[in-house]
Image 1 (cartoon, rainbow, N blue to C red):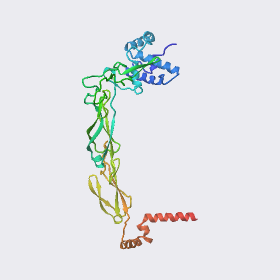
Image 2: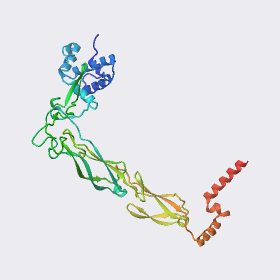
Image 3: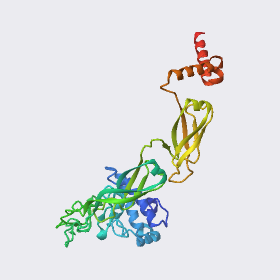
Image 4: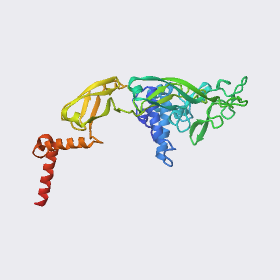
Length: 377
């Protein structure tokens, strides 16, 4: 049976760069890998075909021979192992790295791992969130041991090569015709073992320490925003870079204001007389007090907008507004004289004058009457 064109197998054009060849091969390998397609002979053949095509096209000499003579130019060089320009196991180290404990590579080829990220929950006031501030935080985390400089070995000694992986940090597992490179179980990818551990960190290379950090909070942050401090997370166990610290912002509830994105909301109670005849009130803002004019006949829940008295968003955009919702407060604890005066006033706005002085109530009562009459008929 004649072989398919290698470019056709990988789904690429002639002249495709190596990086794109690798991407095409990885895609096919993930799709047809025997571990993902158990007992599927067709998938196994397609996987083997893709592997063969990549071995040839990823090697400059073999590719040149194939381009000139076709399969005849490489028949003596294919199918005889993993020779050529790329290590197939390195390719699958990328593809299945997460499954088999992948990480970066350090000196000597052993795996190194980035330290863990940390999160610190920081509670600030609304005023601090709007104006911005700087906070000192104390973060307990794992840092490189200052006695052994993170090596884990007693001062004056050094770790030795792992006898299982011989210092590489990886071991190869053979599964049929396919070889997979995995993290060494003995040294967990470090490539080194500690025979004389540091007495302070007990061979861990890390110790717990509380650090004091200064965090700049930009103006306009809100609950849920996070500030990233690179390299301030936990130290790596294998000599890799430290993780990051994420400061999660939580804005405390305010006594007066609520926040709605860039706008601030507040409820302003007003008395019955001011709502009726109008007046002027002083209302607070984050910049100080301002005058708010209340027109005569203002109804409860009426909202007034004070432009530019809100928040400037941290990600840019116009400054929000302050939305003042007035709430008419019913008088309480009235004296007999005050009650008599109110009843006298009530008599002047009810009856024939109800439609003029209380249009909403008059309209509603008229609707109720029509509804009841409709039921009766």
